[in-house]
Each structure stands twice: as structure tokens, then as C-alpha cells.
Length: 297
Image (cartoon, rainbow, N blue to C red):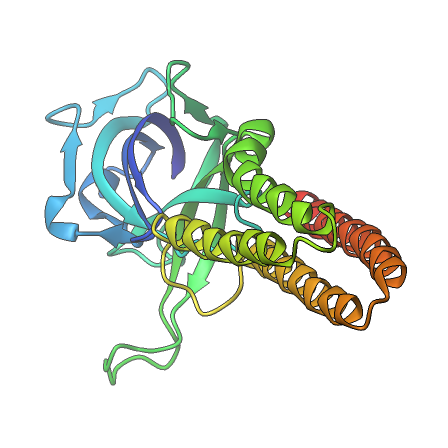
């Protein structure tokens, strides 16, 4: 059974729900007149199955001059795949459509990719993402159960087609949108270590305001993310920003004690060293986190 796919459109992408809507055409060519692949094919990763529409483009399969039968099936609906956001916003995701024959096992029918098995609509756009080169793979999928059928002595094995469309966010715009607010807050927080050490109240006010601003930025960023039980890259960056601001507040309090002890010169020297140490450490940790995320995707 020769198979190929044309991806016409990605109509919606919901990262919070781990789902996406797609419009794809699947074509089949085969020789056995007893087979009807467009009628027995089954999508194995649907989301909201009731909303799926499968429509054969021909009332009856067409017989080609080669003697093969030919049919095209248009499939529209929502599909599901678990997304992982460890490196968000530098994560690379894949939109996947998987299907298999619901009736015939591999001993009766197996899929094989056409010479040019997949194509994308040249006008396909997915706002906020860059679409990569699509791939088609075929495997024999073994179900680890007989589904209660006591007649079977071996597990069910079906030929499965996997269509994969890689996507990623633009590097520059993702960096500006996600990191610029945090960097602005950290820069503002650094001013508490640049003012005169005698301005204790003003420096404390800058630090506390910066801390609350980081909290607000993190809450706003989490609204666009699904609930996950692990730290994504932006969470780690926010934690580093928290640490920077808290370290700055600690330096302010330490210099305030030195002022009370009339050690103004020591306080200024301590603040200057603290500023450079915390700033350089922040930049180094941030560079390591972003570098790892960009490389790993």
C-alpha cells in the first residue's frame, strides 16, 4: 500500500491543551481490489474525535493505467501530542499526525512511502512559528494487548504512518519578547548598588519594587503556558532574577550596618565589589541557561 500526504493547512495551535487543528490530504495506491484503505484508515492521535471529518475525493477508487487503484482522502480535525517546554521559548516542537489501517494487520497489508511522500502547502503560515521540513516515517506498531480476544495468541500488529512537521519560534523575536522585560527589571534593580550608600531608603525601595515586578512578569508569562510540574527555561531565568534582586537587597542591608558603624569607605568598597560580582554572575548564569536551551531546543 503506497501512501503519501499533502499538508494543506495548520488551522489552530493550542499549546495549553496540547492540541492542533490540521487539514491534510492522504493518497493511497494499491493493487489488491479487495482493499479499501480510505474506508478502513484510522487516525490514532485524534483530539475531539467527534469533530473529525474524513472525505474521499472520488466516489469509487480510480484504476490507473498501471493497474493500481488510487484514492485521495481529505482529513480535517484536531490532533493531539504532548508538548514539552523545558527550553521554552527556544523549544522545538513537532505537529504529528499518525494513522493506521483499523482492519488489516501487517500480515495482510503494510504501508510504504511514495517516492515523494509528503508536501506542504507553499502558502502555509503558522503565526509565531517557523515551519521546518516535514517528515514521513512508517513502522509496525505492536499493541501490548489482545483487547480481550481469547482467540489470539499474539499481540495485534499494524502498519502505522507518522507525519511529523517540526516547528520552532523565531530566535530573535522570542528573545526580545521573553527576556527584555526581565533584563529591564534587573537593570533597574542594579541601580540600588550604584546609588550612594547613604541613600538606604531609596535603594531598598528600588530593590523591593524590582522584586515585585519580577513576580508580576512571571505570573504574566505563566498565563500563556500549560500547567507543568517542571521548571521551564523562563522559570529558571526568573529564579536567577529573584536571586539577583535578593542578593542586591542583602548588600544594601550589609552596607547600611557599615554606615551605622561609621565605616563609609568600607561600605562603598563592599557595595562596588558586590555590584560587579552579582552582575557578572547573573550574566554568566543567564548565558549558560540560554546557550543550553538554544542547543538542545
